Amino acid sequence: MSTNASEFERAQRVLVGGVNSAVRAFRAVGGTPRFIARAEGAYMWDVEGKRYIDYLGSWGPMIVGQAHPKVLAAVRDAAALGLSFGAPNVMETELAERLCAIFPQVERVRFTSSGTEATMSALRLARGFTGRDKVIKFEGCYHGTADSLLVKAGSGALAFGTPTSAGIPADFARHTLVAQFNDLPSVQALFEANSGEVACVIVEPIAGNMNLIRPEPGFHEGLRALCTRHGALLIFDEVMTGFRVALGGAQQVLGVTPDLSTFGKVIGGGMPVGAIGGPAAIMEMMAPLGGVYQAGTLSGNPIAMAAGLATMDLISQPGFFDAIAANCARLVAGISAAAAEAGVACTAQSIGAMAGLYMHDTAPRSFAEVQTQDVERFKRFYHLMMAEGIYLPPSPVEAFFFSSAHGEAEIDLTLAAARKSFATISGGG
Image 1 (cartoon, one colour):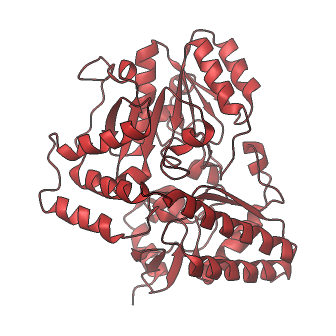
Image 2 (cartoon, one colour; image 1 turned 180 degrees about the vertical axis):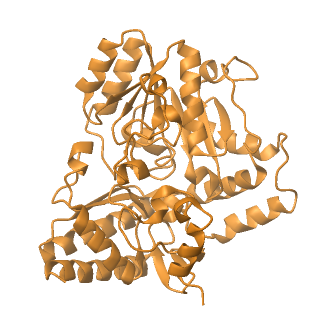
């Protein structure tokens, strides 16, 4: 019989670390990764047949649940017509029209095959548009694996304690300036020290790759003002937050308009996809109309476009986000209450269908505060919850994700598991 342990041993003989994305290796929590055989609705099953309530959601895109029948039907219909054309298809236009309708400042869209490609291309576009080289990012924010953006990054890089990747030339890294999230003076100081040299500021408007960090009131308004004053572009990386915290993403929640937005995750309905969007005056600097080159053979892939359109149909229904946000809020309130009842320093919070859990008595407001949580306690809690059939992201610095497939039964089961796990931790078990 196939087991998680045997499959991991087998994978390590041919895959680097046994995985194709570092955080999947469970190094941040210890133990053996679960090899998933199938998923449906709010659940996943591993190769041993064990069922888990899924709060990973493929790291965000599964907002309508796994294997939604309407998404699957759209994918099957598209696949029957061909898997990839390397030529224009109508669904690219249709999905771009949806994005432009939801985000008024988005007049033109360029699809990519991943969020990494989208953020990498957005930086190149900002540099080409402004004629400047330097970019400002934030410590602990993760924007994919482009060289310029792996300086003091979040997500897997942060989980492994290597927020600056090896293999990045110093000449690349010197163009990346690092500020502190929720700290406007740190951004202002970088602009002043590099006057006329900063092409853009890129930010996760609601941080999710150093766990969920809420922006302080006025932070993004301040970023908008600084960028405008210094002639730099403001880029919101909404790969994670777009269509998850609200239909109009974090910019709808915050009421702040960026110059460029990057998207991914939800707009592909689980298929590989990314996108850059912004005003025509900026976007048309991109080839074939301008001198900023960007291309991808599988960009606008018909299967991904079909999945994205079906997902957009589902999440655009009236009341969708109100319902999912209310249920997610009930879950995180219950987790915090269960921890308090057991006398364990742990709290949770949510925005829309995105949530964070912290082994700390208050929700962190910065990268520095995230680093003070009790990582060993998180590891213990993680494996106790896994034993109860609750699948959380395998890292203390990652947000977790709720879907419309998670109902009262899944919430109740999760809270029962949390109470049992916290009681075990409190009792020293």
